[in-house]
Image (tube, rainbow, N blue to C red; front, side):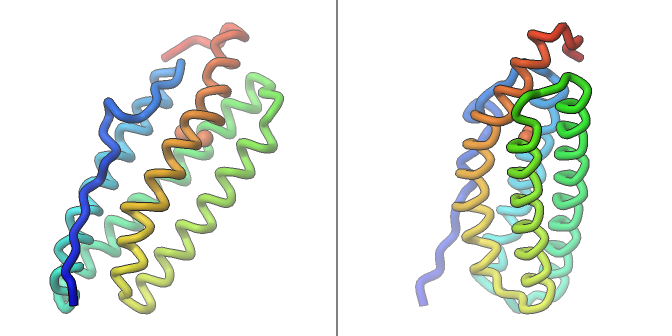
Length: 152
Ligand SMILES: [Fe+2]
Ligand SMILES: [Fe+2]
């Protein structure tokens, strides 16, 4: 069997910046969590028999999930406050992404299939995150600023 490890390609400087700092800060926090997850995943890709490391992964995945729930709630609230026209579309992307994340984490907890998390964290998620920030978040922040929303 070929042992493969990967590295997270998303860094602060490589993700799109939106017009509101609080959103950027949330995105940066998320990158830090995902980078830590990536390191643990790589360790388990080499040897997935270490129960304590499997537990650490489950814990940090749950921390990521909680962070994501707050992240999306905050943006949904903002969209409502400013009357963002594409509210429903942006909110829907959040819902779909959250459902997928929950499903992946639940499967991990049940089956400990590290390759599933590996694909999600190093392939699906970076693509999704970049695309989402570049479109929905970008437009939302720009619209907020145009309505006079204070950037803090
Ligand atoms: Fe966001
Ligand atoms: Fe968003």
